[in-house]
Length: 218
Image (cartoon, rainbow, N blue to C red; front, side):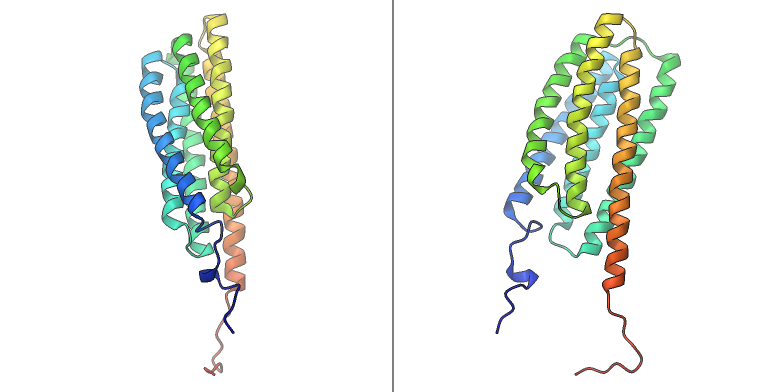
């Protein structure tokens, strides 16, 4: 009798066409927003916008890797998640360092540009996060996609608050504070992804049967 629970005969979340379609849409949205927000960030002199743009770039790479490993073995997906978690943490460190540098060398950014771009990014990320919400409880690779989307939406709200703060105070401090908080969020998200991926790799290694010298084929 055929095994009705074989992986090749089931439609799982990993090879679900809806999952892959959602990743392709998220990849396109994030790649486009990275380019637009990075240009606006430099034009406005906003570290928060630049930090958010780099987050879009990180997520575009995240979705591309997820598409590449979808349907592969758990160990492969977990290693991909481990790489993505480490990359997210490194990105957070970079943002944190550039923010500290800007404390001494930065100038007040243009609040109106921050507000317009931040609102556009929030709409884009909110749509992506809602689309990926159903996949938030999967393995480390799938969860990393959800965590990045969630962090993006939170970061966009923070950028809008920073824009209001810059407009109200006429200083760069709200922009720099938000950039620092986004760096911390990236570090924490990277730690979560790495922690779950390492646990999955340990579990996969423990579940692998070990051959013995006296084992023979049936």
